[in-house]
Length: 370
Image (cartoon, rainbow, N blue to C red; front, side, top):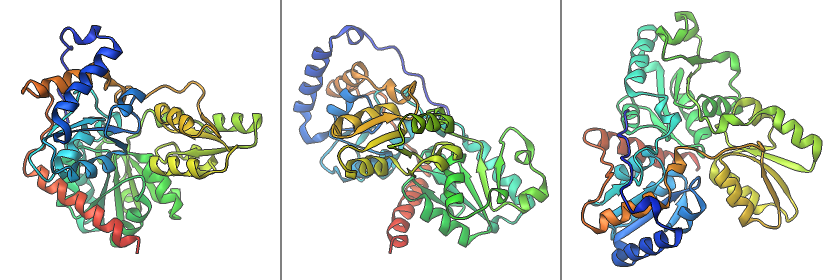
């Protein structure tokens, strides 16, 4: 899905001092009170997290936004698909604002809705559509969330992927998982599915670059997508850490490559990583495979432990970090002036279908935990 470009910020925003921006943000927030909510994803800059009402992963934040019945405005400091999630799940007529339209998600953009639909049509030429279960990672566009609703599939998060994938494989012969191949592969492998029963669908090739026989023998069809940030970790980096200090525990996000997850002591969602390190004994040493802003925040919040990145040269998520103080200040003051910009709206019927898929996932998460 094409996302509009962010126009350059007008004066005086690019030249304001940090304190001036903090003061302006505070003034707007005091003016609106509970009628305005600022949400920050775990990967946001420290100053953005500090100035937000709550931080969390994309689904947690969308659910939180849906509970803010007094709010007229939801300012989502994250990326585009996350703001869409807030608009889908909101219960009132709130306006959802993304401070910088350039804050997209490279992984989500790797699964274009037209390409996924085309892949589905090619798959059902080879096997009956009743045999295929589409599952989309929550890190995807609203149109792809709507697509799984239409086809009887479901959405998953990195937290519930294991339960959702296990359910999907019991329901139908083939799991069609997108957009992140690594979450799909790591999850299926953990459930005991051999690699020989997984195949990678290349959207640039007819039938994904596979033969009809390969498609028929597939149990897990993985989309050729990934998170560029989590691909910056390697098994070699883990070997170096352990050679220097065997006391380090390795914890990684399941969006990392299989070789990294296999060499980790444990792997799980952002929330899992945060809670696991927080609950570990004082003096523990952790090397973490996820976005650097979060790693640095975990280290700061756990001063009694040693917390570092698996990759010593790790960079930040470039799209997530487009949300900065100048853009947040500008977005809030545009709301204050009665001219809100970058309003994210999911239109019908996509919104209703995507909401149906999200609500189904939430219901299943409770049911499958029993």
